Length: 165
Image 1: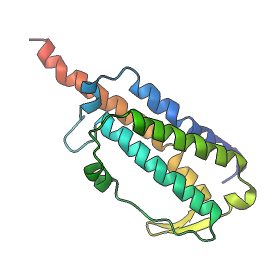
Image 2: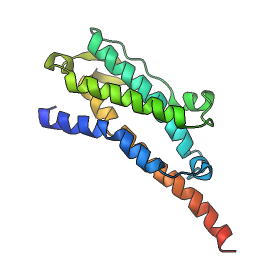
Image 3: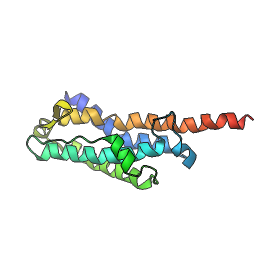
Image 4: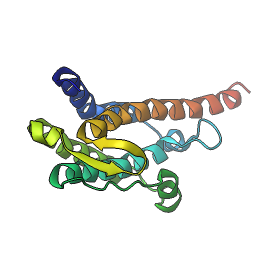
């Protein structure tokens, strides 16, 4: 990855919390709990997923930088969603997401060329280094911000037939 692309991805990564926060602005509990389709996550569930994913990704980056050939462990996001009480209030998960992303953003700004060259192992990826980590997580929050917006809109869509009666 060239330096220009790296800088672009870092800026996108750092902008992730803003995008999610904007997508949540003014959300009611009804909007937070609306599911756009069966089997899809609600905005509330997405926020909890973002907190969990961000904490996992922050540890992954730290392992990649700190250890030689760090072994990165996968996790099952569906198991997390089922077992980690994703129906709870979102405020603390939103703060955890924000703090992990801000702290990691500071690391990204300070990393040396040697840090960027670090490689680890991941059972789901043939090659997993710091650059790959950034490619995976740079737009992760933005994609979920879009999902939050769609989930919130589904609450309005579900309410529309009732309002026209």
